[in-house]
Image (cartoon, rainbow, N blue to C red; front, side):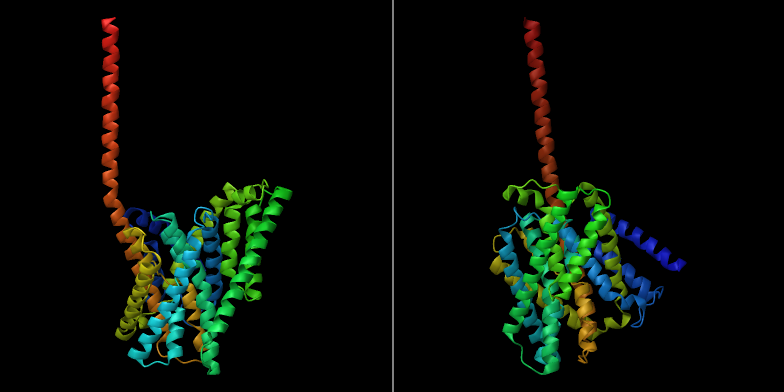
Amino acid sequence: MAIEFLIIGITIVMGFLANQIFDRTRVSQVILLMLFGFLLGPVFGLLDVSSESVIVSILPFIASLALIFLLFDGGIEFDIFSLAKTIPKSMLFTLLVFALGMIFIGAFTVIALGWNILHGLLLGAVVGGSSGAVVIALVERTDTKKETKSLLTVESTLTDALVIITAVVLIGLITAGAAPSVGSLVGLFLSSFTIAITLGIIAALVWIFLMNRFEMHLYSYMLMLALLFGLFSLTELVNGSGGIAVFVFGVILGNARKLGKIAKVEWVNPVSRTSRLFQEEVTFFVRTFFFVYVGLLLSLNYFSPLVVGVSIAIVALVVLGRFLIQKLILPDIPGRDRGIVVTMMPRGLAAAVVATLPLTAGIMIPFFQEFVFTTILFTNIAATVGVFAFGKEVEKEEPKKENENCHSKNNNKENNHKKENNKKKKKTSS
């Protein structure tokens, strides 16, 4: 037990150091923490990561906990009024990227590996969505435009639901031996999103009412967490997307003051400054352990030439799909933002969780889980490279601004000096 607590303490320190390294070098904390987890488990064996271990058994809980905190954090920082114009475009971008990625990966597995088309589409669905936990962590630390951050936040929030729903439907179709039904997929998506959005709005209004009616201050954050966990659970129980509901809940609370003005109602701020500061600390803690956990799930057996080659090909196809869709949907965004949009494709725990479903359903697909887990690692590396390249461009622009500022300051000093000399001359002449 003592070793486990020591590892927890070291992990927190690693999270702090990873943030510092990212601030100074633009090398993402995601890769550093995943590497730390990989060293802890598969390499040195300090933690048991076998299929029967506690760490693997609590995977669904860890995935859900990370999504709850990180999507809620992304929601309260989401300015719905300044970014409202980008939301329809973000949803279109998300659906097209997800669909094209499935098609590309499905076709590749049929041609290169000789898989059944449904098996290929299932792999494309599992690795087809970016991780909200990873994307929010990376994007919030970049200098991209608000519209671009909105696009990537909405995409990563929606795709967790897309991955889970599509994979479950395809697994059902494979076990039943039926052909895919577009109507059944669309119906599931719409019902899941509608339920989630409705419950998210209701929960937010309930919390705003409680804050205004009873003026709760002490332990208000804990009560809000209770409501947050209850919202996620209830939404999942009624076949909605818990992640979407949590995100909507955060968006409503984060924009409550402005929404109140529109409704001509004066609302108390439902998320106090103290709660926001505590939320940042909790988010840091969850995010750190989330990334280390992903590293623990990797295995040395996942790095055979076949697995690595196929995973690199999948990453290339994902990049191609994102490049084509952003050219079609987002032709006018700046060059740096375009690079971030194309490379911001890290897969996360949603893919890791769903990767285990085919085997539990009795579907044997060779190297399926290996492809998924290695793709998670490589897409995170690609996203890190994208952020690093973007950071370099920003640094190139900054000296120009500094020179301009210095030049303007020198001009101001010269002008002030001239004014003082003129005043002295006037005094002496008088």
